[in-house]
Length: 332
Ligand code: UDP
Ligand code: MG
Image (cartoon, rainbow, N blue to C red; front, side, top):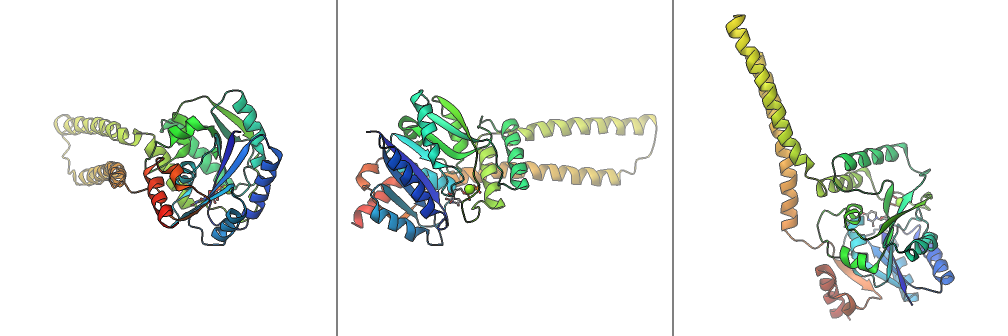
C-alpha cells in the first residue's frame, strides 16, 4: 500500500494542534486505501506544543515528531520534515488549518493523472490583512521582474509531491532557503490546484514583518543576480550623466565664459556619487555575506529529541539527518 506523509511545521501551535490532529486522523480513517504518517516538526516552540506532540506520538505510531533545539524557521522545518518522511506522496501543510488537509482527495486525483508536483493556489484570502495582501502582491511583482524563478502566484508552502521529487529536493542544501523557488525550478510534471484559504483556526500568525521580509529577500537574492547587474547599469548611467555635465562645463567655460565657482556642484556630485558607491557596495556586501554564511557550512537544523523514528532508515538522507540519527542511536 502507498503511504502519504504529511509534513507539518509547528511553532507555538498548541492552540490548533489537537484540532489539526483530529482532522488528519479523520482523513486517514476515511482513506483506507493509503497508509499515513504525520511528520510534526516542533520548531523551537515556547508553549505546550512539544508536550502535545509527544502525547500524540506516544499514542499514535503514525506520528513522527522532530524537536528542533531552537527556532530555525518555517523553511528549515519543512526541510527537516522532508528529510524524515518515508511516504510515496508528501504533503507539506501549515498546522493552523488555513490549508484544509481534506484537499488530499483532489490532490490524489491530480496525481493519478500523472502529475508529480501539485501547487496549492489560494483563490481567495478573506482573513488576511490589507497589508499582507499588498505586500504579497509587491513581492510577486518583484519576483517576476527581478527574480528568475517562475513561482506560482498566491501559493504558500502547501503542496504535494511524489517520492522522486522528494529525493531530488533533498539534495538542495542551500542555507538561504526559499522552497517555493526551488520547487519552481526542479522540473517534473507540475500542476496547480486552486482552493479557498480558511482563516487561522486559533493563535496568531508566526510570520511577523521581520520574518516575511527575510523570506522575500531570500527569494530574490537566491534566485537572481539582478541586484548585482544593476550596479553595472547604474555606472553606465552615471558615466553618461557626468559626460553631459562635462560638456556643459566646457561650454560654460569656453563659449559663454562664465566663471564657474563650482563649489556647490562639487559638493552635490560628491555626495551623490558617494551615495551611489555605498549603495553598490551594500549590494556586493549582501552577496558576500551570503557566500560567507554558505561557506560556514552550518547545518540547516539540529534536534534535541525525536519520537517514532527509526534512525537507521534516514541515516543517508542528509548530513543533518545523519547527525540527528547518531544522537537518536546513542540515546536509545
Ligand atoms: N512556522 C514555523 N516556524 C516559524 C514560523 C512559522 O514552523 O518560525 C510554522 C507555523 O507553525 C505554521 C506555518 O509555519 O504551521 C505557517 O505559519 P503561519 O500560519 O504563522 O504563517 P501565515 O499563514 O500567517 O503566513
Ligand atoms: Mg497561517
